[in-house]
Image 1 (cartoon, rainbow, N blue to C red):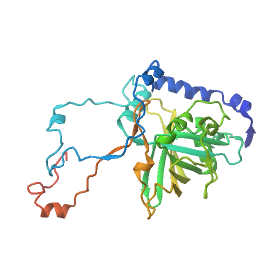
Image 2: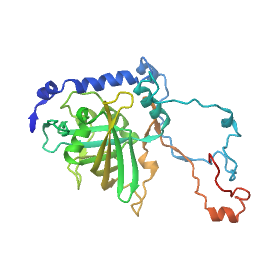
Image 3: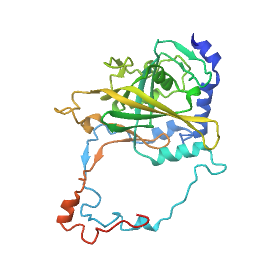
Image 4: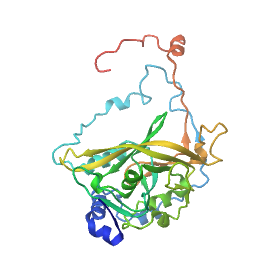
Length: 325
């Protein structure tokens, strides 16, 4: 049975969800600085004139069979084994480890809207999904990537299960629609502002000052400032359960098909099959509160087996696989 609620009723019905997410942020402690404003003030200004540059690879003379380009230094280092489910290891440790090691990552800036533009609650009975959402939502998600091109398929990872879902996931499940926008340098502060732990019913669009633009195949708005955006339709979701705390739902994977691309005219080539990274200037997600700019590049062609063989580069290297390789 579906019921509509105003903001006060929504918070009264589910007072814990918002606070739980705030407590989770305190546990994760992304920000390592007691006073970030002082740290920020001590750093040099943003180099607005930093241009795109290409360099050689670290070892342009590298040959097949050579191994690393560090002279073997990395082979002298030892590794530590980490059991993600070790007794006493908080789940937040795995989160911090992964977001600092799996880098850089594209940040999916996702726009959604509810089906009727109102708060809605679908009661959970016999496994029926609980949906409690606001009319629109705009938020960044760094568990985002592309996994297929025909059809164009993207995946987004949401923290929390269905019953404690963020508004973005609630809206996505409610409508099966969203827009994935790529974050660029020229609106990084505005995009970051949408991750604020605002109460239910507060517009992230208003807080960020970003502008909605119409789409063709979905009702959700794309971000006008974004150089590249993808309209998407939800294909399916999968909920994950904690290994450390059995029964606790910790995440949801959403599989999304891209149904329309939007590219700024000055960024796309004539064939409409490539974006200029010098115009896109995407922001990448690193660990903690650290992000990266994409300004330094190098190119390295994929080798062709037959060409390498004819050139004699694979001499004495063509061998059958053995255990451990």
